[in-house]
Length: 345
Image (cartoon, rainbow, N blue to C red; front, side, top):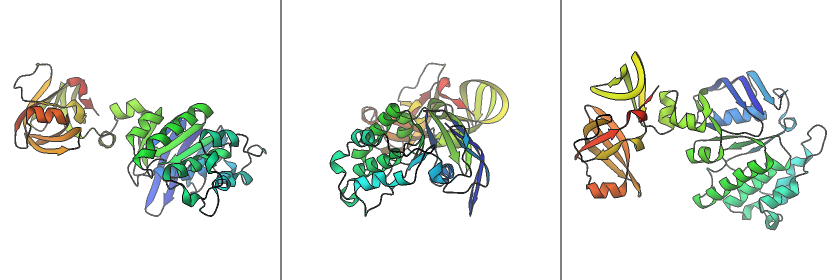
């Protein structure tokens, strides 16, 4: 397990502040956040590369805050692989074995299994310079796992890969996690990776944790406007409440909350905002007339912006529906969404 208790790190121009994360044994946990939020700083604090100003790093019940990296029982995989170009594949995989000892025991007992599971046997004597991106990532994974770590850290492990390799490596990581039962902390900004691999997540912004919870909670029940925007809700508006009604600008929006007077925010995912040419919709829905201001085609779907009463809504509409409705910029439309889909923060 991994515990970060009141972790603080001060660096020139940046700081981590009061980071508290608890990851259970065998859990796959992901740390989400935009570029520059502090994700990699958290990882490098855990592994011991960056000194901690205040707080504690606990691995499997042991405080490792002051231990050197090789004594922490941690493996790490960086997004740029960080392989040695002058060594063969086998030499890269086994490089760390001479430096790591866990409880006085020499690591490497699972080396054969790891090499076989990652399909690296035919590549062992090859130069790193002659490998594809997917092959390099498999070598980097093997090197991290070869030292029998109790914890595996992954720093944007798929971001440097071509799309063809990304899905394969993602499947490999998931399978290895299931088969080895290792505790994994991964940092990423990719929602697909988080959904596919992790059970729980934290969102970090400017060195502070904004929310921790299950993947479903973070994506569907964001705690702050920043988290809502980061996970793609897009439609985020300040509001004043009167029972189950939210007043934002000149619009009154039905919700399933019951709040009075509080100045909070509402957020609606763009895929939950439906566009039609019908003038009437069931009274229990939020039905709003507006004007299409922009259509951005992404192939199978389009981003559609709709303006109404000084507010701009973002919707995701299937391209075939755009064609069927003959939807164009400047056109008057009716958009609707259910009160259930209005999230209150």
